Length: 301
Image (tube, rainbow, N blue to C red):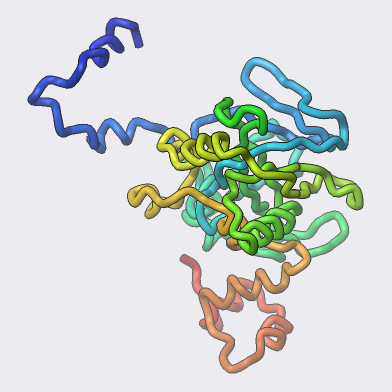
């Protein structure tokens, strides 16, 4: 767009016949939700800021960084999802199917696995097995945290993907902040790696409080439309302009890989009945999805 085209908005106000249309839904629909923003990778136990132009190592291998978390994405109870038909090969690999809002496949996916994530056969534990023969859910879960540097809360935001194996740590951090009624964007958060495991698992630790001025600025940014438009609310919430996630959102619907059986049962409860059986007895039958549907305990949606 040229400078001349932009200059028409330098007037004091719109012509009288155009005033009052500031909430024009047609123009608003042009804004692409979830626009690309810089990412901070955790590959190789190292925090690396990646932009279109360059990669910058933010710390040495295994060294923690401190940030201010402005928002959680998706900003609701859901987790985002990624499915790779073949083994995941790295940060820059594109998934065969994905959902940024955890509800429906992203619009750029050419061949979605299912019309909705809740009904997707790839979103069920036991649909595949890992290299050790353990039941897994082929479609992996994650959330993003939207962060800024501690020393400049007005800097450009960056996103860090919190993988499935780190969601339990994220949840524990959320509970800690909720317990103390601490505003997420008012806390200095240290991001480090769990040195007891062989993969990059994030640990979240509160390390201090922002100053009053910095907190005011961070809170204003966390509630801004500019930031909101980068997030992936579920469809119904987009129209309602749902509030951004705070500390409480960190503990919503986090999937604990250790509790895979429980997660399966939660899915079955939502779509069927136990017919008087205990959850353990029901699960012990090891019914296939097809058998569950045939027996009337589940249905495809």
